[in-house]
Amino acid sequence: TSVILNCSRQWGKSTICSLKALHVLMAEKDALAVVVSPSDRQSREFVRKTATFVRKLGFKVRGDGDNDVSLLLPNGSRLIGLPGKESTIRGFSSVSMLLIDEAAQVTDELYKAIRPMRVVSNGGIWMMSTPFGRRGFFWETWSAGGPEWTRIKVPATDCPRISPEVLAKEKAALGDRQYRQEYMCEFISDNHALFDEDLLRSLIRDDIPSL
Image 1 (tube, helix red, strand yellow):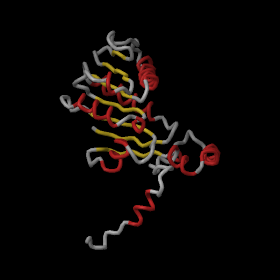
Image 2: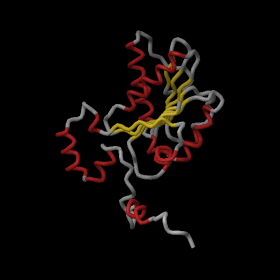
Image 3: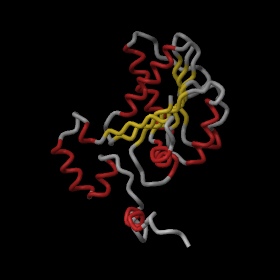
Image 4: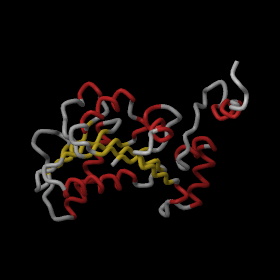
């Protein structure tokens, strides 16, 4: 299964995906899930969240003994957290589930380097992020990734934990463009571009024959 989560800031996308990863690891013996984030700190936080749920299930939390950021379950399944460095991330194979946290901030080069990890196992890819402009694999997958991707969009207005009053203050503080990106899950064109992308698209006409 390939899933792309386009969610507001503070919606809880990492928590949801850590639960999904734990479900996959518990259901399959000796399974391997790998989470990749822009930074080592973010990958550690993802594994830490998953470890919290492991404790609630009554299992002892421990690493796999080989990887610094890892989680080993009683059935032999593992979760490994990796930083966003293409030069040091290779070497894993037969990945049952590949997770890309804050995917809009991960480079295209890194994405191309990690995709082969799950070709043998045909493992699923889950990428989750708040938009970060109309560029990169996250935007391209969302806009033209094909029917194999399940797309889920959750703006802040659909999150009961975030009040309308707080959102009004955020919009006033951030401005319309930034607010729409951070909280309404919109892919905003580059603010420094000479011409707005939406304006340029509106000028394109298909009813005029080409020369």
